[in-house]
Figure (cartoon, rainbow, N blue to C red):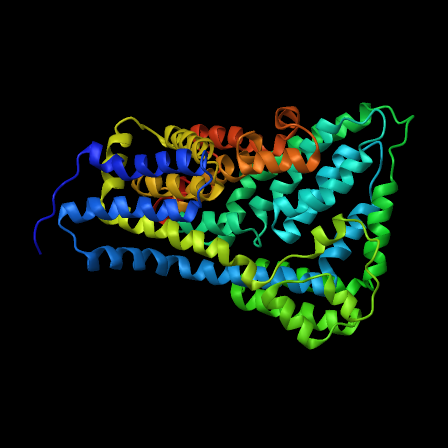
Amino acid sequence: MNAKKDLNLGLALLPIIAMIVLLVISYGQLKLPIESLLLVSASVSAAVAYWQGYRWIDIMNAIVNKLAKAMPVILILICVGGMISSWMLSGTIPYMVYWGLKLVSPQYIVITSFLITCATSVCTGTSWGTAGTVGVALMGVAAGPDVSLAATAGAVVSGAYFGDKLSPLSDSTNFAAIVAETDLYSHIRHLMYTTLPSFGLAAAVYLCFGYTTPSSHAANLGKVNQFVTSIENLYHFNMLLLLPPILVLGGAMTKLSVIPLMLAASVLAIDLGIILQGFTLQQGFISLIHGFNMSMFTAQGTDVAGLLDDIPRLLDRGGMFSIMSTILLVLCTFSFAGALTLTGALTVIINRLLKMIKGVGQLIAATVATTLLVTGATSDGKLALLIPAELFRESYQRMELDNKNLSRTVEDAGTVTEPLLPWTSAGVYMASTLGVSTLDFVPWAIQCYAAIIFALIYGFTGFGIARLPSTTTQANP
């Protein structure tokens, strides 16, 4: 094999700079499809590799090797789409939302909003879906006098993104695990170190807020009551509807294989939909593949006229096909990552960064800063996970740190900070959906930024830092 040319720092940075420039200008300003821009960025990386002396077959093999590592998570994401729609068919998710809304207390609407959206987002794995459905209903409750809309919106966003971090159904949680090359459930368990203290801090603030809020004016519960009544009229609720999530949670705790577990939960949900809700087997499989749709109620003779607009936004979702856009993004990002890895550009950059990084705390801080920079520059949560993971993975290994430290840090600083930036799609969506400006609810979205503080504290103190097996005697597991 011919000797390959070495990269200097400028050439090593070229593919990354090209990608950031393309995304900021073309995606941020011209709104071009992000997948096409990633492919252009991959072409730049491939051109650098070709200049070094690699050939097309080498570049393709590097990309295929990256995609091979992503395949298990791609299959999990497909199963997630099917599971969500089957849980809609059975009434499992609506049942949990129903009981969550029944617990609303006007005086403690902020803490209640936080807890309900936490539970909903963990069960559904979607922050946008949670905020756009249950969150909207809760904002209607908060419209009463003496209730802060900014505080309620902040609590909704915090709760919605709580599940986006911890739910095994969340595409960002799965994506963070795969880009950092760690196990999904190990990643989720390690997230507890920063997420649970953030949860406790947020809950304490929201509880104190409710305790000090005057209760002389009851908030308007009309919209919530309408929402609850509409769901109740559509489904036949039964405690058996909790069996699918119990199966998933039980399997997760006993470390059963993820894909068979999700498929089993989907089949169980379809069975419940047929037995309890009166749907047909055909509707069950259509829902599994294409997603649940309100028209399925009409097909069985249920009148859906006059329902709140928020009901279809809650129910019409899921399906294995719904994940295809995310999978396309995964394919494009890993095409870029595969070509970039072949060039050795990351090694050049990391070696330069390592000269400035002297310890674990500085490494965690550098990861946080890079993730925030990519989030703000690209407005894309997936890239905010991918780029720092690719840049710093080798640094974590050199310091004998388990990769789950990396996956935790990029999620702490990436996924959940995106809605706090007014110019990102998540920031625009949350502000427009909840009717509160981003800058108004940011101080109250405690769950979304507190984890960064805990991540930095752990990095500099060593607490909650998992090391590789050879150094476990020095580690906090």
